[in-house]
Amino acid sequence: MPPGLGVALGVGAHQGRGGHLHAHILGHDVETRPGIPRMRDAGGTPVGDGDSTLHCRFSGKRPVRRLLAIATVLAALAAPPAALAIGDCAPGSDWPAASGSDAAQVISLVNAHRADLGLGPLSTLGSLGAAAAWKARHMAMYTYMAHEDPAPPVDRSVGERLAACGYTGGAWGENIAYGYPSAESVVAAWLASPGHRANIENPRYTTIGVGAAASAGGAVYWAQEFGVSSTPAPPSLPPPDPAPETQPPNPQPQPGPGPEPAPAEGSEVEPPAPAPDPDPTSAPTTMRVHAGRINDGTLESLASDDGRLLALRSRARSTSWSANVVSPIEEPGALRVVYRGSSSARCNQTVALWNFERRVWDVLDTRRVGGRELTVESEVEADGHVRGGEARVRVTCARSARGPFTTRADLLEIVWS
Image 1: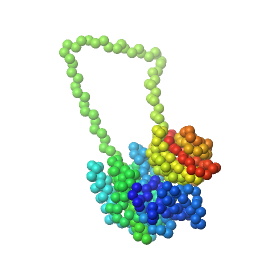
Image 2: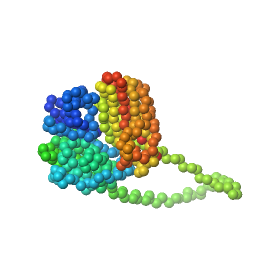
Image 3: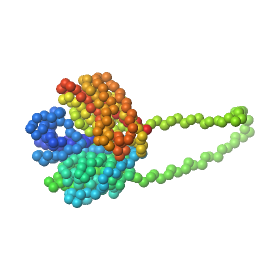
Image 4: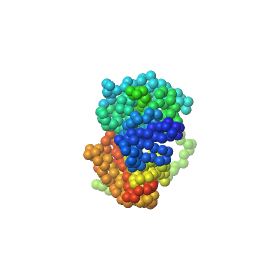
């Protein structure tokens, strides 16, 4: 990865001098040397093993250079549910102004790149533009970078912000960045990052919105939203009339099937029962790491039980991560969480589901795991566990002894009913 870029699914950091990363996260100064993440409190004592979370605010003690992040909901491209609107789309009157010219230049550069690949241009959509401008101005006002919107004025997810700004297309993607001074530099950085580039080059996206705003210190914050058109597709044409049948000359009579026996008087003939549809299943769309660091694999490794693993390495006593899963049905009544994983050293594994109403983690399963993969399945009611069409699952593995170990996740999915 080129120097000066930090790329994450909701993991915050920024590039400092000499290859170090410095940030101010949840009240701690973080100093991260390559391969040796450490978090220190105000007195310099190491805390945990230096995990970064989605919500982070930078201390300002060192100049923040450049940072990228990406969030995508792609698993729902077929027919995703609309998120519930939380809050509104009105920026604060004291927030930094949006730069319309920078936003327009980003869109022009993106469409020029797509044209070079033979892809269609992205058309601007007012709701996506409003959501991107709100996000860029909010980040510039409060000097943070994260996909979720922290309060003030309201704590909400990307999908909830898009819905509040009027977006109804369903599937979406978001790229954000910080510290790039021009449209050319931020687009070049996004294209140099595989995840961000995938959003820009996705052939299914048809619409775009971009926001740019500078903080009081002069740093530029960028937000780029992608979506699909909410206009229904035109009806398909009827099939052509069948060709007329021709009778061969002097046809020979062919024996045909005999007449079907009539049902007995007073009996009813029932049609065969249709095969039941399988319950819809979806995999995680975004994730965040709370303890440890990703050692191997990607978010896509969790989509199926195929041997591709998402590995988290810890030098302390625990690994912990959470993932959001989008429901493909509008109002699920229940959900079944399925998780399969293992650990290089025996640890106490806990699988939990976030309760949006009580704002606590509801424990679904806890057990001791080791090198053999184990599967956890737990079914709960959707009430309280789904907000904006999303559920949130957390997997934690804790040890009593301190020392390096690795947890490996092979599958995380939710079956909806």
